[in-house]
Length: 201
Image 1 (cartoon, rainbow, N blue to C red):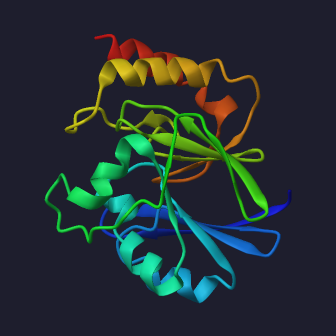
Image 2 (cartoon, one colour):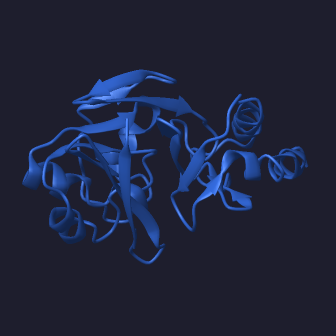
């Protein structure tokens, strides 16, 4: 399944929005603040919006794109409430999750099959969306770092378990994080034990 990926950091937090092109279909991952114009200029056949988790800087443009492109939103079920309720009072335009994806569920959308690998901790539903050899991993892993666990609804113990789960994943994949540059799971496995130890206090 050959894929082409476009990336643009959005908003004050420079949250990476991705457009994933697969067999003539376009998937929009984490459309953050101000993402609408860039997305609409770069899609020809939009099929779905995919959220790695529910934080406002990853879902801000959900509603606008859902309306303008008439496409569904797929979000991990544990974070769907964040799309609707603006839990951090940021003024996030409310959006509605069309498909609440269960933990580790594999879904087929158009020509693409993907798995929402569940890695809670940063948020209850935080997931890495696996498409082929690529993880769109939101705020689970960054190059040399991990997502914060000091927010409301974060859970350090769940993050420790998620990091251990990532350590045990049996193959290397390319990581496309929610912030910063790409990396690989193999590279981050060198750093993850440090973060597990740090979370143990």
